[in-house]
Image 1 (cartoon, rainbow, N blue to C red):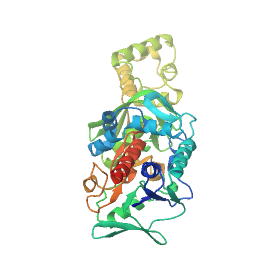
Image 2 (cartoon, one colour):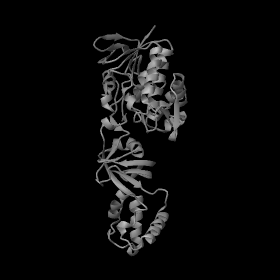
Image 3 (cartoon, helix red, strand yellow):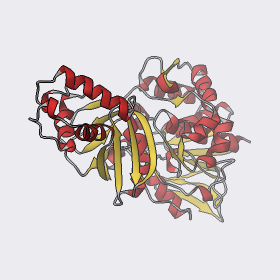
Image 4 (cartoon, one colour):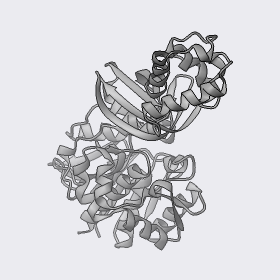
Length: 405
């Protein structure tokens, strides 16, 4: 029987081991942490957004970096197949807004427990607290891995994850292994991460719903979205910002602007009419006291400042041109993006093992026979919503299936 070693016991490592074990392979996971699935445990704030319940085409559309590299992986093992697999090993799931799939219990620990029980049931050996220091090759072919001793192997899958959340053990070991075996590694960036702003508006903690954003690189729009966001002590975060960061992270240091439409449901004309209505209601009040029905309290002073209208000016004295400035301030609230937060706050890593060095139909290295890659270590990443975990599971399934074949 041929020997498979999986380096890394996260999402991709456990899934690959399960598939190999179910098919009778002699399989060992080597994990440097004291437990499996350490990063999976904190995914989705502990609820674990397993995947997005959608077809392969939509999985590809929601992949930001090298989406078509994943064509075979997604079509071999899509989100429907993943949910079916989890249900078959005893994990009940549910679908929430945006087709996000969660364990019914809303506990990531139940996901890990289901995978752990299934791989042990299928005779997968697990070595914890064991750090791989070298991937061993000879004449362009895998021979095994080295920890404090040498473990021979016929096949090896590198499932070490990326650089995000390094406290879970994602220290970039996979990139070192890849480089030492001759593979190219593209530049690494934190992604699905909060963005830092040049301005300090004093809006920390303010959460906004149903807003629209546009991200501009040197006055050219590169992304837009609709949803929720949050102001932080250093900038902005929240769902739409995390998705925008996929595009912003590679252009830090250049002219990046985030434009926020605080009232996207209203056209400029409709917003002007709404402001006029509020002005009639507060006709004898000062401008600074006339926006309470329209905006969150924390935003009022900022919008007044951007409109360049004296806050103590009477509402009945504000001109049509001044109202236009109010409208533009509300529908074009701009922030200069100067940086991202670091890897320790990023959900995923953008960049990784160059996809040109990996066969997309098998996940096998084009350089080293019987060496495979799966998950975040590869130069692929996607939007938030379960898509990145699906990448981990799909690439792991394809790698393990290719070895079985």
